[in-house]
Length: 345
Ligand code: KG4
Ligand code: ZN
Image 1 (tube, rainbow, N blue to C red):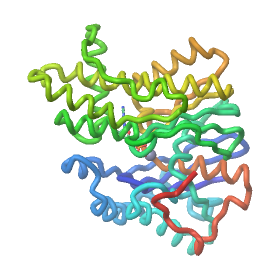
Image 2 (image 1 turned 60 degrees about the vertical axis):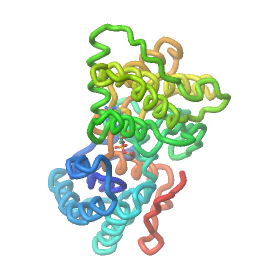
Image 3 (image 1 turned 30 degrees about the horizontal axis):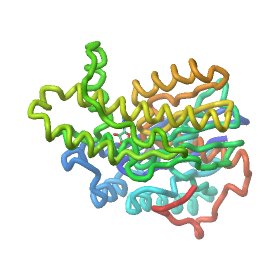
Image 4 (image 1 turned 90 degrees about the horizontal axis):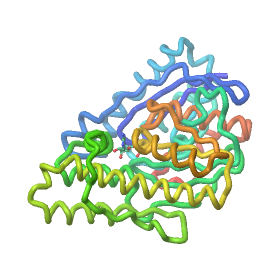
């Protein structure tokens, strides 16, 4: 069967066609109209501009996704769309478009939680799907979560951020250092330069909540600690790559510590990494080698990089597995379907 995925929760209008049968999934198209270049001029996402751009681009994006997949709307089983959380004016563009298409095409709708979508990026194009129980580390611009799944489409949040998300901390730290939006990829680039130089950094930044008894995160204090160090150091611009490295390592080491701690308690069969920050090569490598060394019995999964930052392939995948588990109960009538900026898992 074919599922059409639609995503518009922040600054990406995206559509994708997924072909699926049983546990096997294949992405036939993955189209993204990104607004990053527009928002970069302002140093962050401007909701009003994002909403206008979504309205302009969402239908052509859906059209391209169907054409690239070489199918028509008649072939699809259902539309899966991000219901929330996110910027409400951005979400509305995707949700209301999906509702209109559902009504005209007479195809059912599957609502998808954005964070669940990120987790299901790990189930795309897999010869061997992650096994349950599963532990997911979801790190994006809006979320930092540890989520335990006993089986498909069953979620228990066991850890979350108390303040800034990991990606948000990257973005705010980049702004403090005069770097462009989004901050993650650019800080990662400088950090990698420093890592490759083989030098030993003398910059000390805290690893927040490392020893707290729970699995929660907090990245706001780390960002402030960086700010104070920059203010004290007249030469910080000359040490930019070292500051980026120290900041990135503080985030990565905290994420790894908490993930391993949760894995020790919950004993999952698989660990999956997800969300925009999962595009970070250093996090991918360091988390992977830590799991291999310390928890060799647990299988570790990473989404392909194209499915880490916001995309609709992951939404189609989550929608499909919702249907796989709940059959027609996964469907929501268009008249009861509303975008929700504060949607809970
Ligand atoms: O999942 P995503 O596209 O949007 C949200 O759901 O929030 O994540 C975007 C976040 C941004 O904060 C961005 O800076 C971060 O992911 N990000 C990265 C990298 N690429 C994107 N952070 C660290 N390293 C990267 N390579
Ligand atoms: Zn996201």
